Length: 429
Image (cartoon, rainbow, N blue to C red):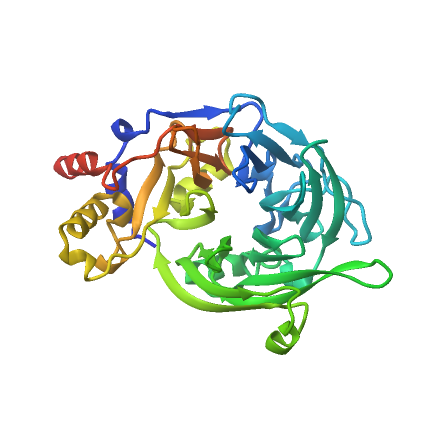
């Protein structure tokens, strides 16, 4: 995590370097959207998780306003018809034996995975009034209808933040902090000290002979203030973000329904192993992560300044905080740095404010989206997208603190795209 001085230097990369191809859509419909996830197989559709009552709803500190508005899910065609209003999915929570009631719905992270044909399974981290829940839905794209499959309430998943599906029956989920929903002073101490009391969990859906649904939960790793989570199924890589530290990378092995799983993993419900691989620092407090199977790129968005975050969360009228989304680049080897191409690449990376406060071996980031909060502030989830048909790559992002969704027709083509403004800022200082 970069020090405050780095953030002041980054502030020099301002208005003249804003991406002119960006626009904000649907401010009147989308409010305080925590997450956006793109349907698989190069689909033009995305699922958005929003909560217009978010400023009155802070489960971490047990601040659950009775009059807070309910959360919402939207389906939006980001590629072919971005100006067409998103479709509201009429799920508002489900009444069931766990004690939840319709309307007790405050979604954070979401994940969507194909089931077959036009059907998809949706997993939702629901910070409901009664406690942290995982909602499982089946959604039909043709009829735009859904079926509620089950609600998971497990003491291990007491404060879920982000979620990613392995398939329709297995998923990873992060819990933010041990003291969430329990003791507010403990939350402050846990976050300030970066205590690794949050968790990365693996869960498997279950169903007994009587049709009773449930879930089995297994610890993957402890983490300080767990936020985003993402996987690359092809390389079997798992990433999780720690708001206190940066991005942790794991190699995982997932072998469901294969012979020998019981012998290898000792439990047929848990065909999973995960091994810590790498840690990468970020220039801000990282929130959500997106990996695109299409572009093969990993992006991270997060909190640039704590002051800006809390000021905006306290009042919708306050200036929105800075937005920042960065792309993780391959690490440059010593051999790379001996070539002209490698030296040029390193120079471009060093020029990017995302790498200002990092050590030489940590220069692995490229700024994809930056805004000082004037146009679109506080991006919590942002992704590089492929518009196809010769249009190339662009960017889509949502914000927990702002309204609408930002969409950019292009992303910066050079890793050092902020260099001129950064140098100007140094001259002013």
